Image 1 (cartoon, rainbow, N blue to C red):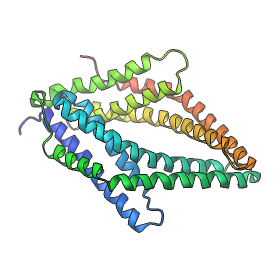
Image 2 (cartoon, rainbow, N blue to C red):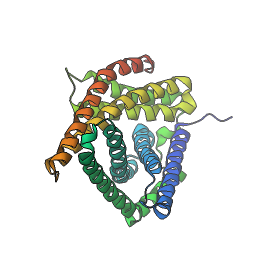
Image 3 (cartoon, rainbow, N blue to C red):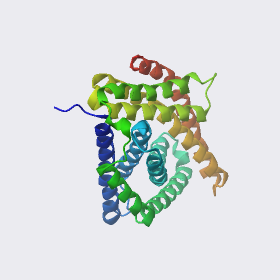
Image 4 (tube, rainbow, N blue to C red):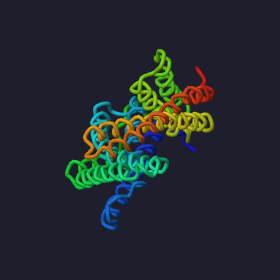
Length: 295
C-alpha cells in the first residue's frame, strides 16, 4: 500500500467539504419549492458548516496549496458563509427566543407576540437574500471553482510530503493558535476576545478532524475536546447576539408591551451568557489535556 501524502489528505478534505455543501444546497433549493416559507433550517446549518470547514481546510493546509489560488477561493467562501450565516442566525434567534418566551409570565404574551412577529419577518428577509444569492451568477462561478478544487486542487511541493510525518506539525500549529489566543487574555475577557477564542477552537477542531484519518486517536481526542469548547463559547456568543438584537429592536418597538417583553428576554440571555462564561475555562482545561505532544 502506498504511503498517504499530504496532498491526498488535502484533496480528500476538499472533496468531502464540497460534496457536503452541494448536497445541502440542493436540499435548500428543494425546500424552497416544497415548503410554505421556503426554508430548511437543518440544510442551511449544514451548508454553513461545510462552507466554514472548507475555509478552515484551505487555511490549515495553506503550505500545501498555492497561496493566491487558496486566498481567492477562501474570499468567495467568506461571501457565501455570510449569506448562509444570516439565514442560520435568524433561525437560531427565532428558535432560541421562542423557547425563552415559554418562561415569561402570561401577562407578557402580547409583547412576546410582537417580538416573534419581528423575528419571523427578519427570518423571511434573510432567506429571501439566501435564495437570491444561491440563484446568482457569483454563486454559479463559485460552485464551478469548488468543483474544480475538489477534482484537482492547486498543490505545492509540500503536498508531496508523507502525511504521517507532516500532519502532526499541522495539528500542533492549529492548537498553538488557540493556546496563544487564550494565553493572551488579561483579566475578564471581552465578548470580542471570547469570540476570537471560539474561532480558534473551531479551526483547531476542523484541523484535527482533517488529520484524523492519518493521525488516529490523538487527533480525534483533540477534535472532541475542541468541539466542547466551541459549543460552550457558541452558547455565550448566541446569548450575546440575542441580547443585542432584543435591545436594538426594543428601541424601536411599536408598543411598551413589546419593549417590555424584549427586556425580559434580554435578561434571560444575559444570564445565559454569564453561565457560559463561568464554564468555558474549565472546558478549556480539559482541552489542554488533549493537546498535541510537543516535538
